[in-house]
Amino acid sequence: MASGPTVLMRLVASAYSIAQKAGVIVRRVIAEGDLGIVEKTCATDLQTRADRLVQMSICSSLVRKFPKLTIIGEEDLPPEDVDQELIEDGQWEEILKKPCPAQYLAIKEEDLVVWVDPLDGTKEYTEGLLDNVTVLIGIAYKGKAIAGIINQPYYNYQNDEKQTLRELSEEAEAGPDAVLGRTIWAVLGLGAFGFQLKEAPAGKHIVTTTRSHGSQLVMDCVQAMEPDAVLRVGGAGNKIIQLIEGKASAYVFASPGCKKWDTCAPEVVLHAVGGKLTDVHGNALQYSKDVKHMNSAGVLAALRNYDYYASRVPESVKKALVP
Image (cartoon, rainbow, N blue to C red; front, side, top):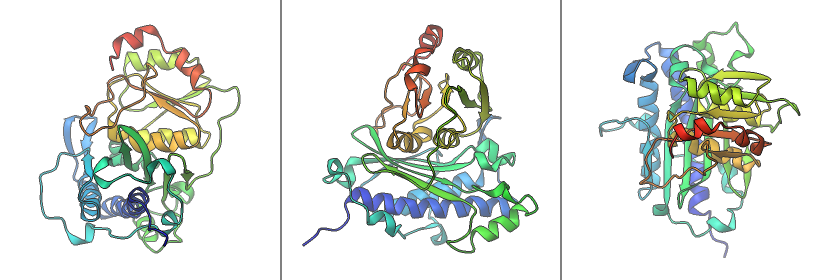
């Protein structure tokens, strides 16, 4: 008798549906017009009502089905009863039909760590740059990122500028055939799904980097790549999507500002299609439950030609950023 889906594939299937629910919440908060913005540490480190509601939705939905998981979310929220309408208990059946990679067949629930960024690109969200925004759910095993889900609540939203955000929000909740929003997912050893892989133009060095967390160190590292163009956008999830869709050839962030919940899910999507993401020293990022949350030595990523970009990181940058 065939056994049912493994723990990992059930978790990914559930996280997919939970991420889609999160996208609906993100759109609903905009449509209702009250973002509920608070500053966390500074004017560029913000939290909105969407951050809070989405984290409650994701964490509560996951823990109901997988009570032994370790879940680490970006927002430091007090424990409280979660409204039932925030709970998503569905699972994406298409994922359950796919085979679990052999190396993950025996994984137990308690072996997994889930890193959650409820709203990656919060500052851009508050400024209406909605195509920068993603919801990130990354899954790690033995310190390595092995599965990831990225929801883009406003994918395609600019295609019809005549529509208001309220209309777009209502349209997006109309049913599964709505064109607004999408969910990308990946499992190492299985592949990445939900998008069309495209490479940046050959011979071009197009660097994507931070929009709101710049510094001299970041600029020095970007310029050392001798870029043909520099794209300054919000959100780590958004930057990795630029790599896999051919809009950029490298993601360079020589700063300790990025956290594990920013990189866990996007890293898996990139690695599943043959790309590479490390710190500026070339070290793999670690995602065990007891690691520090900050990616202290920055982020360097590319879909192709990673070695070219790694070789150009200045020694001064490496000395300044200690892993």
